[in-house]
Image 1 (cartoon, rainbow, N blue to C red):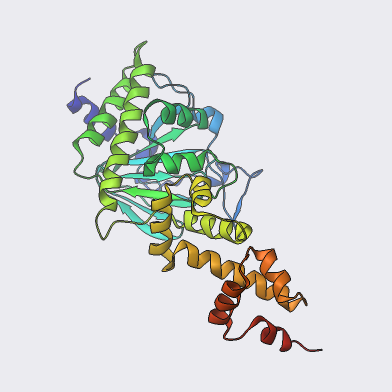
Image 2 (image 1 turned 120 degrees about the vertical axis):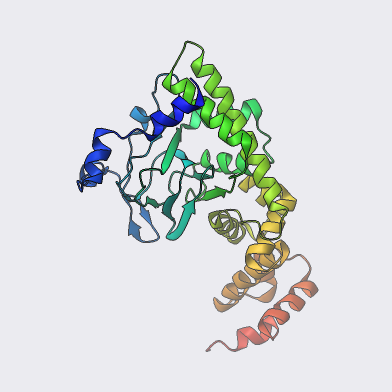
Amino acid sequence: MDIARLDNLLLELTDSERAYRAGARYDWFDAFDWDFQPEIDDNHVHKIGNRMRALHQKGMPEGLSIVRNSRFNPVPEHVHDYVEISYVYCGNAPQIVNGAQLTLAQNEVLLLDAACPHAIGELGEHDIMLSIVISRPMLRRSLDQSLSSAGTVSRFLLNALNDETDHRGHVHFRTGGSRRVRRYMQEMLCELLEPTAASPQIASRLFELLLVELMQSYEAALLQTDAPALPSAQVAAAMSYIERHACDCTLDDLAHHLHLSPNYASALLKRQTGRTFMQLVQESRLTRAAALLDTGATAEAAAREVGYANMSFFYKKFAERYGCTPAAYRRRLPR
């Protein structure tokens, strides 16, 4: 299939789109999974999409599918139970992701973890956005075949495979000028629209190449001073891990838990919180020690409980944080 024909097929209006343009509205009530309404930040969010149906598509490998989003039909806030990649083939795509407005420009990519709440604004006639739906087994195969576990995209996908981590993250790839991203997407679409017996294998390799290109472009952007930060959910996960393991937490342990390199985890925490890893650990230990003192524990017992072997160091750090010795802190309690 030549690219001109591909462009025409993608721009062709469906009967539903003509109806939406004329004023009809899709009833999203029927699309919601009423048996599964996750609570995110104390708010119930609807799930849209059937994972089993979405991941079987002729011309695509098992666990990977591509759909074109309907134009003139805004999508309300929702989540999925799979990872999704949004790609703008042409035009723009306004979205709200985790409560923040975001506009994808032509050839840009948005990688969404399963529990990331997002809504899609109304697309105009020349706004073509594609959604790639990815299963967990497909993610594992892609990581095993072609991706370094140290890359940003790999870390995001590894997080998506981990049941114990937060899944509200997203990454916006500003790849408007990337020739490779566009070419890989066009070739995958050609395999989908004119499938052959070899199409699933070809599409699988193209998808792996797409992830590699996204990884390289994002890592290059991180070298710039105005580079976008990794999802705040990873910082929240890091803080939670430190609080739970403050007494014996190491940077290597934290980095392994988050699927990050130690240097990158340290830089991420410093950039997002303004404090180093060790400062965050010390704060968590001292907060716990103060709570133990509040229950009547001795300074020695509190220090041991939170991981301090050197009492002089504990006294010094405690005084720096609370402006008094542990004994003075205890004396403030009512007898």
